[in-house]
Length: 361
Image 1: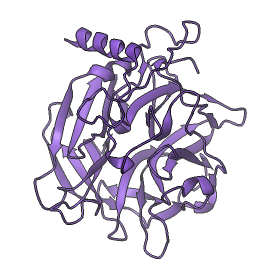
Image 2 (image 1 turned 120 degrees about the vertical axis):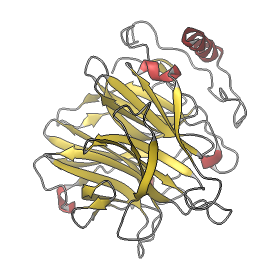
Image 3 (image 1 turned 90 degrees about the vertical axis):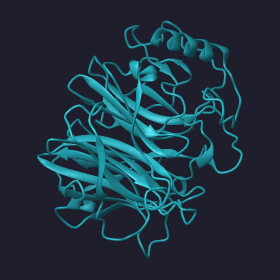
């Protein structure tokens, strides 16, 4: 069955089907592009073909004990899913388990966005955002935590243990967790009263999955021209620690072709809770490639492949023009690519690679 799925996917990529906004067709809108040449392609055992996973936005890949775990937003915004594979390439057709379905009414019955899976404190936890539903305000988004009752997240029962306790009761989403020098942190996006933005980035050490060990600090507010296109947004943070530095990438602007990635940088020995420790890159570090027909790249995560090379996981569309609200266009696909580092130690993500076998960095 899996071999058949892989063959069908390869036929689809070769054919270059292009049907924008055909939400009823799960393979819609992957526009035609030439695959990378053999000379440019990564080693055969990588097997990564872009798009990696169709119609999965806000992708999160988490490596633990030899398995890659994958979760993401689904076009219906009504459930939390999980896949597992021994390879990144294998995630493309891995079995997908539904861990949690949004209730039909009441709290958490609105839009379900951007789940992230993490293991800490001896437990599997998933941060996700959900609206209130009931036709009242599905965009009244708050962040919640799902927790597994066992060691195998693909078999365990998952239940909501509560809402993240932030300083303000306001639009909150895209929580990511990481450990740095023995401290477990949470970084998330939230709208703060008195600041004329849609969302800013905040950081705090965790006491429990739902509570903080210290008052949060504001790390970033969207003010630069490329951060405020359509909406004033900083969201979708991801942590990377390399070359003596800490990097937090994030996404900015509306979720169409203007969506792009920014980056904050701090010395790895700095006080991460001091906003002055962080420097914002003045330009986007990853953005639309008209040449390669990859539009609105963002909401990334990081992992390493089986050779230990750094991989950028992100979503993007294969076309620019969108009818209606971009959030309800289903064709943000999960993509992957290798990246390198500049002489100063900072990551160089390059440009989004075109459809086909993943090229070398």
